[in-house]
Length: 419
Image (cartoon, rainbow, N blue to C red; front, side, top):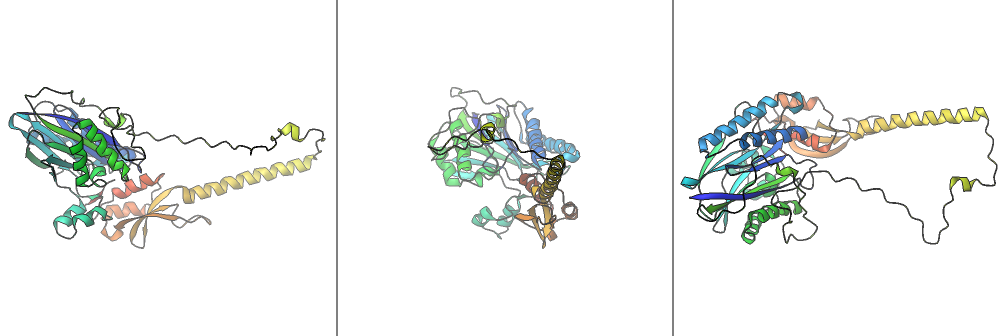
């Protein structure tokens, strides 16, 4: 007889502005979802998946867990009919226990993973549905090459992309002392297996271990959102510890995880759940100070004191006013041209490659566009619908939005790119 205890943590990372990950840990079920498809779409898809799972109570068979994941897929797919949410989707990894049989039932879609730490070894339990994972299985890439491959973010399966989805089921024999990790790719893309094992071995408390895993990923680059749910398998006859987190608690609304600038010695003391994904407000502009001993700057009245104001003829004033108006209008026009040509982002075909540009392709006036990111995708590899979307040259307000658009372009074999 076993029971599960656990904790969760999340962080927006050092590059993304929005946390599209969602996670869940309750007495019945644990899960991590990594959304994709624009800020609003990715967040919504992940939230819909977790919302579907959070309503599950009691003992959960593997068959039931698969059906819940399929229901989440249908719900996301239906919501994606909204034009503002078109193309949204999410990965999912979920686990539920059958305590009487010491079994952990696991399902996954996409590249969010489940790991098991047992007897000093870390084992990946789930199989990624991704382009590089397919290449590794075929022997065309090594594990080391896959870590830095330019198309390592392409997944071949996700919830919400089509009306039906294949969900991979796993039934794992759980033992007392096992530790299971459910995580988004923001963890394993930054932190190697030995480092994960080291953190687990040195931190028996699940809450502290979860926070340190997330903090380590952020400190090592944090190029993506990172989310961890850590599950400890306990003997059901042992005294029960702290109550697990409520099923409907949104871990992305907690206090920020302070990773600091130095080595990660301890976890923060705010609890087991991860950080709020708020943007940091801009720092106020510094105040210019006069050098020591310099005379005080006189006010406007003091500058002209004792000197009569010069007379100005009306025609001169009119000419001056007209000049100022013309300069203002020209300034607006140039500023608008600059913003139009450089202030927005576009995804375009540049010599057969899919490239993110800052500024309208071809430029405006003397303001040329700037190449920001060669995505590694080739136009010839895209399917017909994705080529049409590329030709539309949609304008994006931020680099993240442009990258999310790229992440939803599909290759001829229906591969989909995720954040």
